[in-house]
Length: 381
Image (cartoon, rainbow, N blue to C red; front, top):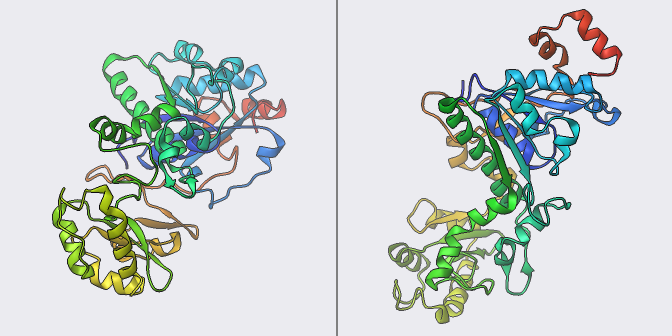
């Protein structure tokens, strides 16, 4: 089992970065219990193995508008190591499940809170989505071409990079600290904070004077000819990242193109970038993607073909590492990262809302009659 085996974590059902965080924690071995609502909408949804981010959970469906439903959740909190939610600030407090209430029932509870804007600040109560959160951090403005303007990088940078990953990191740190102090704490994971943290390298480059705010005019934003994507003769694309002078020299050699001298004389001279970029673009147009793979893949050029999702799962490197797995006919990511001793594994496909209600209540000491009464009263489903 994974390194979090033995930890119980409660997930308040939500969308986007919340389920992804739950998936990561489950893959690493935690018992993740999702609190679903008893609404007709939710209960009409069956288990969907294609809902990859919902894999590996147990689910209990609870009426959060009823005091007995809240009490049921709090009884689970008493047995848990952590709880996390992704609602707007104040929602959990209104439900009666705020950090103070949970801590009163379990002083070791780690309370993860993930929002777009954070728990405080003038935007904290406003609605938003990934694209809005990365917009005020400087990240969105830096991604795209000079002609196209900013381009949304899926929701990888905000929701998952600045959100889920920082929530999980914060919760793991708090769990580690709680194992020493015996006390939990609140983890305020704002996507905006996370993305600003992700931009640390660019902020450092800007402070050094080697990064400016002009899009597609910097080393890592597609401005440099040695760090970009290029179209091949068959309309497919390849990527090169030949930053280091020795890799740059190899790029010129394998392309059989004059790219000037590696290093600061010509390679890093921005004035020369358009000229050399055109030379590289023209050369890549002379062969197909597969032909360029034969020439460059596996060398120190820092090269890779640009693949779609279907192709990625068939690439020999990913196949060799078994980076994709199949669960009930759905191809999906294997758990990451990998551990040498406490091996992570997927704890099953997504379950329907409320699928584990009875067994979880039995684990709290309720008998069949008590569970039946809660069902009849609409407290659980």
